[in-house]
Length: 194
Length: 194
DNA sequence: TTTTTTACTTACATATAAGTAAGTATATTT
DNA sequence: AAATATACTTACTTATATGTAAGTAAAAAA
Image (cartoon, rainbow over all chains, first blue to last red; front, side, top):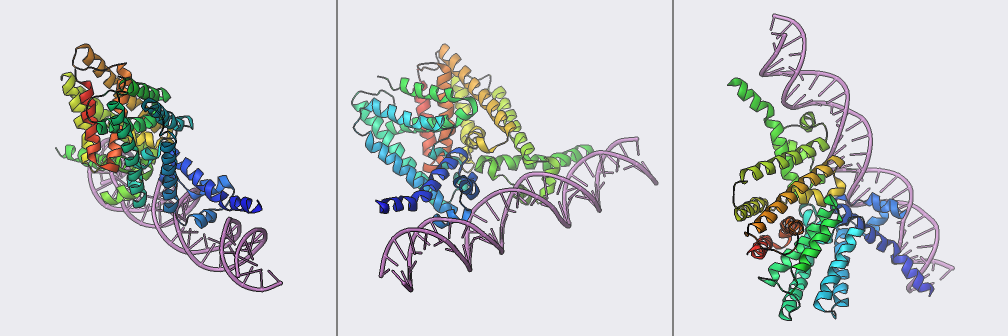
């Protein structure tokens, strides 16, 4: 019991650092992430962050790793749903970024700052996007086979279109409002109807 | 004659600064833009840039202003074309970013760094995107009316989908290769066919 | 109870960023 | 020919960034 609490205290700061770092990256990109912002918000010193994550790259990699982990858990959690339900769940999950002060998704943040992030983050982001794109391709392919979705052309092309439209839509919503994102979602769904 | 040359020399550095700044912003975002990079490439000193553009915001605004100007010239130049030709021209023009070392478009760069750019750049980017989206909406609407395009739903929704997919596609191409962007373009065109 | 580990803080090093003030050579205008 | 404007450079200021080395209090292990 006291052991449990201690374990919690031990990892509390470390977890909070990653949580805040994630937030900052989704709001302003990896280059905008600074030890100052994190330490001041947590009431600790910069060096405390370096203790847990020796350099910024380590922290950035951990942020992406946890994001991938979250998505894998999400995929597992909705694996039993119908095709349309899966699609809706994915879109609903994505829309949360918008509601959280116009955050964008990790893929979009990594891609737009691709030339400014360390090599290991680049490959981690690539791997992450491949997971998402493959998941979406499978969903579209099996959905069409079972007559839940209707669309022309290759499922992988359609998956490219939809994932990039969603990621781009989150970004553009910052410029012209959240309606833009919602319009994209409704258009995607409309065009998948049988 | 000598007057012309002098005029050219007078504005040469200033133009080169904006050109380089544009390139840097499309490659790494506005926060990655530094006076050092520009001055070293042009063989001048940082203060020379401050002479032409007192602060970074002035330079950033001029970059967007010139980008909008270019797009307006482009729209004017292709205004006489057929619907499909206009669409192809727009997509071809966009694809040049990819070929130029995976640059992204100005809208995508502004949107992903939205929280890191000055307020005047934010509104300039918003105005720019509205111009593009309206142009695209008009193209789709008149194209459908004249039976060149076929699609379900509202033209403005379809325009949102396409513009965000293209901007997002440029970014994602950095992660998984240019085929991703080409797949999006071919899917968009396939889905517009009558 | 002594030793060691954990999770920090203090203090500092180093780099790079934007921005400014004052000086200067050349070209242009008067 | 003298005055002025242009397009810079030199030299400096200030702020902020990542990162490191050494010290420390409390908890855990031996």
